[in-house]
Length: 143
Image 1: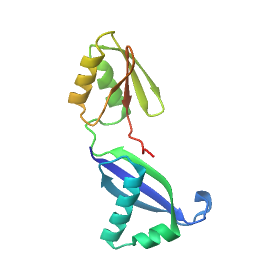
Image 2 (image 1 turned 60 degrees about the vertical axis):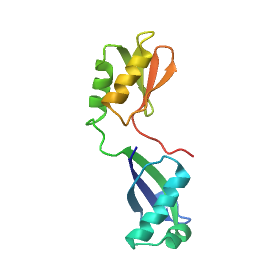
Image 3 (image 1 turned 180 degrees about the horizontal axis):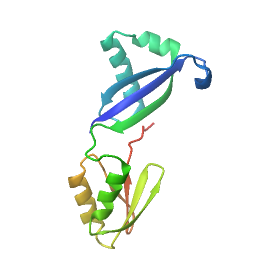
Image 4 (image 1 turned 180 degrees about the vertical axis):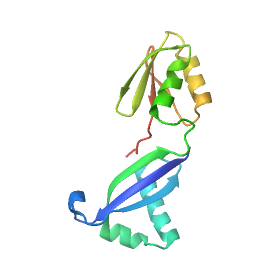
């Protein structure tokens, strides 16, 4: 799975709201592990020659790491939700945080998850409880 990663940097020791300068480094990654993303950040700035990893490590703090799916096959949340609830097995939905919880007819969870995975390969639906399938609509960085 490929993700677009955006790392926001602020000068070391400055609260983000007081920083005059914020740097955003964008690159692609195939992992959601924070340590791997930080390593990839250092590789990216070294390769681009616009900063070096020493400067990033010693003069800048990572303020935020934002991850998005690379070229998702849906155009926005409403299209994604519309498709996920259009399958025959779906009976309702609820959104909380970045998770979409789909109510599915009892015994139909496995078939529903297969349809979601085949229609939208970037998504990894999982069984939350009997009759409820959870879908991450936005990937999150894992510690």
